[in-house]
Image 1 (spheres, rainbow, N blue to C red):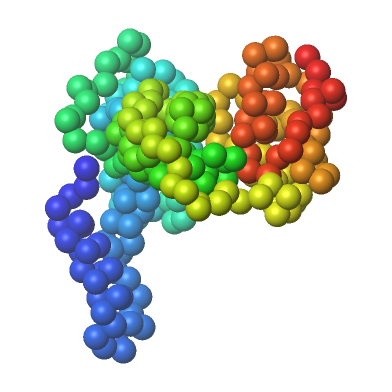
Image 2: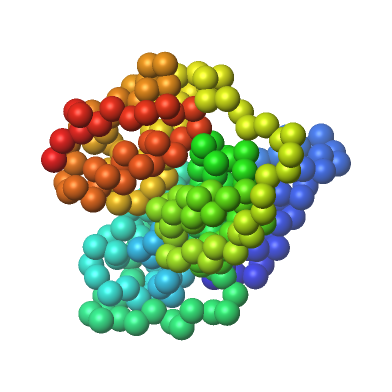
Length: 270
């Protein structure tokens, strides 16, 4: 994506800054080539993270504050997005946008290796699923490993009941970005003497935060439309849903949070 010489210069610049082998280097102003390499890297990384641009064959070069963009996209809006991203990088004053808009453009075939953007997405999904399992009411009965590959989540480990296994699968499936779930949790009875956390030990503020976070990470529920409050473990949901299915899912997700004794959904309307 970038010129080899600039990659080398950027690597050397970073290594020098980290090593701090001399005061002269530590206090020196980065060369223009290093600055431009950093700007190219910033622009390209943002493209790689964007679900609208990552699949396209976009290339970036920077010289004296001017970014030149080349490649192909299917729509004008994506070409303009690429330009706006480049202009948002510190030091970029102008953009020569040579990206071609080709209707029905087909991006290059996906490589067997995950792209940088895909790896970031998968890591985010894994983190979100783990968080939802950790603060769920079934957490004490789960010893789950979560692995994600291009949106496909694999759950492995153990659950102390079929109910806990199924709940873990649902929580994973309703996580933003998840395409499918391979639930390989093995049901094993809980060991004698292993006590579960009492629900009355959980603070109301903690419950409210986790219910809101669960909505934020989940698909099919617009958490911004739901107000959440908790009193004595009783969660009250207020807002207007688009459908009965969305309302039912919002209630189920709230009930699955650790410490929730009941959910008052009378103010959750359609």
